[in-house]
Length: 482
Ligand SMILES: [Zn+2]
Image 1 (spheres, rainbow, N blue to C red):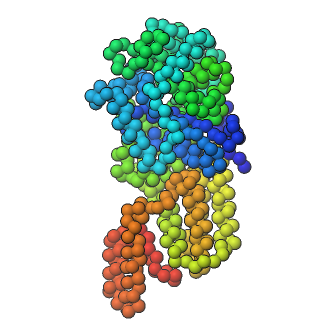
Image 2: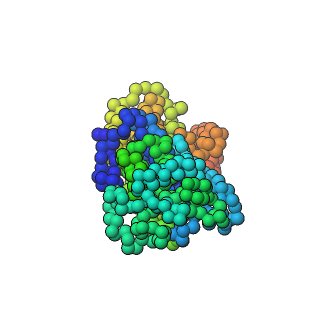
Image 3: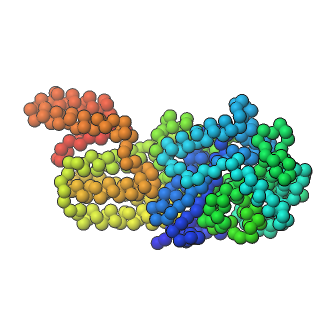
């Protein structure tokens, strides 16, 4: 089996073949930094984080570019999102940008999302955007009116090939920017004229102004990845108009294809209702992290496929929390046993199960990054591991290390949901040996038939959330909650 990716452009799964063997260039539309990130951002960037992790796991050298939109992303009222926020918060626009860029990376770090290799900012690429607009004017795909420049959709017959929309259908109900300057309502702004009171503006051959939102992604993707490049990702809500416009600009300007594989993640619903800021049901990550650990949120996102909608509810999050706890408990027990086990060969049946679970996990990932199926394989693996741990046959140190190694390879390197060190291990290195000491003391009391003291240790540990279990192999312990 080889990696297959669903390509929005061709509407089918295709075998993935990068343009340059061994190298993958990927661009994902990043956040507009005028507010704190919400669960919709988490769905998109966790999904693409796993895409990038898996490509690297397969041996590709990946260059991951994800932009920061700090200018030009307009509201339906025509106001710039960053500028509007700057007025409300009485900040310089670049203070707004800095504040929410930091907030974005803070939350993504908590979600164990690896940072992009390049995070270019739109405002740092104004000359390149002006060059693109000039090229489109020279080639006759754009026209200037009163200091603004528009792309003429009628000149690019392939407009609509990504979204499947026809230009004729776009005339009706076209709400954004119904400027009287445009020749056709579907034409979109490449450059907008700015009045003197507009703070974020730059000089251009057409006077002072600022770039249209779509321009930055065409320019910054190809500046760092070339044209064409391998994968362009984003949310489904970006297919139209944003990505359609990117294709039109880049292909019209250079006469060659723009992107080879278009990947789009689905949206988040809240108890069945589309999540949107205007509906007031947006769930901000900083609020959510007060109730659920970021790892629970990450795990929850990956239990649904990136092309499926993710329905948020407290019930679903709580179920994810319990599921992750079950998975972690098995891994913890394996790791806790390693220092106390004897060396010896890996039994054939154990080696066989590990090999077959790994193969099935990788096959799921190669099938358009099917994370729910892959996670299912981790649970199947845990079911078998738990049976071995509960049996009378002691597992050798080598066998336990092979099991731990597989959890790390699949659950940490690829999915990022099984940490090398669990939160409590990071919290206090003393805790584990102290629990071990109490278990030893309790054993001595039991041997001396001092049941009262032995029971007291067990009861006090229980109060602290540590559960002791007596087994034929000795006393084991686990935590009541993650
Ligand atoms: Zn974009």
